[in-house]
Image 1 (cartoon, one colour):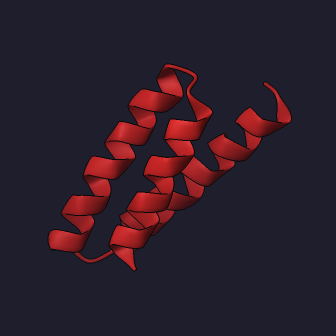
Image 2 (cartoon, helix red, strand yellow):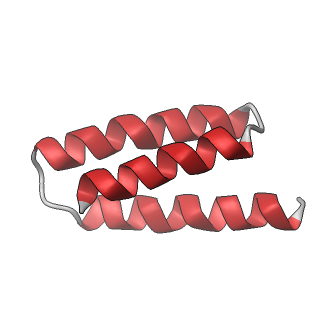
Length: 62
């Protein structure tokens, strides 16, 4: 893995942990959609899209 890929993988773990701790509700539902899109982009090795979706997921939980 490149340093960029490692950074993205760590960001995914961080967002997933935040999502796991969040209370149920519309914010958590919205964040899940972004997280799933990030997983899909990560599988496709699209780091830019992955990071965009992770940022959106974090914003949805805020």
